[in-house]
Amino acid sequence: MLATRKIYDAIVVGGGHNGLTAAAYLARAGLSTLVLERREIVGGCCVTEEIAPSCRASTTSYIASMLRPEVIQDLKLAEYGLRMVPCDPAIQVPFQDGQVISWWADRDRGKAEFGKLSAKDGQTFVRVDDQLKKLARYLQPFFLEPPPEIETRSLRGWSDLFRVSKRFRGISSGEVAQLVSFLTGSLGEFLDNNYESEKVKTMFLANNVYGKHGGPYQPGTAIGLLFHLLSGGEHELQGFFGHVMGGMGAITQALAASGTKFGAEIRTSSPVAQIDVRSGRACGVVLEDGTEIRSRIVLSNADPKRTFLKLLPGKELPDEFLHSVRGIKMEGPCAKVNFVLAEEPRFTGTPANYTPLQRTFYTLVPSLEFAERCYDIAKLGEIPEQLWVDCVVSSNADDSLAPKGKHILTCFVQYVPYHLRQGTWDANRELLGDRVVKKIAEYAPNVPNAIVARQVLTPLDLERTYGLTEGNIFHGDLRLEQLFFMRPVAGWAQYRTPIEGLYLCGAGAHPGGGVTGAPGHNAAHQVLRDWKKGRFKEAAA
Ligand SMILES: Cc1cc2nc3c(=O)[nH]c(=O)nc-3n(C[C@H](O)[C@H](O)[C@H](O)COP(=O)(O)OP(=O)(O)OC[C@H]3O[C@@H](n4cnc5c(N)ncnc54)[C@H](O)[C@@H]3O)c2cc1C
Image (cartoon, rainbow, N blue to C red; front, side):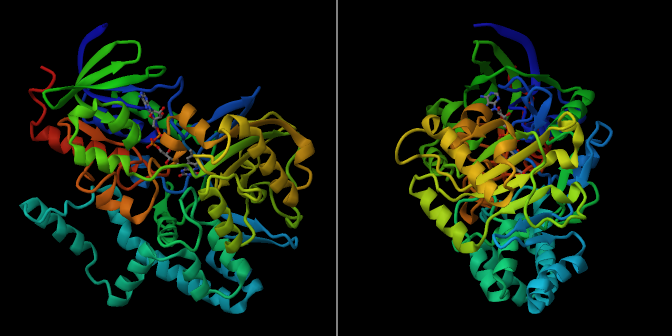
């Protein structure tokens, strides 16, 4: 075995945006830090890649809505080229009768747009928006701190419970009830109880439930309403949706540049085969080519299943912990299809005076019932004929992505199964692509004949190429029993793991998936607190 002599303070396995965030904070604090990324580029599922000559797309994630303002500022991402332009309309839904409804950032404009469908719903929109934003503000502070330790036998447990209860000072019993119903209830029931127009309900659907298991009538799906109202972007706007100039990869390029400036070392094409554990303590890694690299601590940006079931010898972990990790719900349920087009998609019903930026974001989902059926088919292992497709004409927001005359259309697709009942994803990849094209053609008939290149990423491709176990885009479904002090599993939500010196810093840790930087930020701060206590002085010696 090859061994490098240097002992790093910290090795980060994986250069996704959370690994890079963690590394930058650790390097900023003076720890010698090495990031090891298996792919030839950093970024994980926050990347811009060439999908045809000179044509670049955000191949996986495509909208920045929740990137923490603190991370942007602390790591000076604007100085490293990060620039976001608000999506306005945040989304728009073309309906099959040719009407296009837009969700404007300006609330009065939103009220007027929904009011066209139902005057009552226009009024309700304002009331519900206030209510949701207020509730989201209670949750906001939890995003950038470890969840409480609910172990009340320890002093730490009690002080954590005190910390949590302080955050809810002043909350009314009505708000507690609302919060509980958002955490446990279904989006569909919430909408049925509050709105009368099916189109208004569909607008809310289109703005939520992304990447999550469950149709809109399944318990736990209302939670997205609050998640989407956590503030994001440079200016801490609640409900921010942003196009990133240069594609999503500009975020991870800025993070990498910031980390490097603070002194972090980043190596790509360096897949880690194993996290090295000696006497119950992480002390480095072994790469797939056999190279050993030592460190005092290791942070894993890989998802929990990959980290604990693949990168660690099973004997190092308690059975009960392994059992909980095996039970984490992954299994898809989405895919991505990226296109280069020879002409801009023309979505029927788009007002003629819309600017290119306003002609960027279209969600193709006609109703809640449609989405519910789509999930039901996918959960049985079949590829639905009728898919829910989110379309972003990203070259309309940023014309540097493609040469003049070419257009980039990036499409998020749900729901699709990871486990197919019949056949393989390799055999069904193009079928999925064809179904997506057919769906888009219903709304933008010029698209099929304008396709120059097409890239289909099935859940299996998301696993193979991006390292996402079972293609799950959030490193574990965002359901109540997999959130907060139960993420990744109950008892281990504080970024530490049963292995001394091994931390989880990716989306599988609190507060979960999405391009937020929050797990990376929180894990790094947990490491630094432990580091200051002198916990790792003897490690790797
Ligand atoms: C198709 C798709 C669409 C999405 N759309 C959006 C969106 O629009 N907006 C949004 O906010 N979020 C979106 N998401 C979710 C979001 O991108 C992810 O939740 C988030 O980027 C996860 O970041 P991460 O750094 O925790 O993990 P990842 O990005 O998964 O990074 C983990 C890194 O670890 C590396 N790695 C794994 N194993 C090893 C190993 N053994 N050795 C070395 N390296 C290893 C991987 O290669 C990867 O680079 C989307 C995700 C996908 C896949």
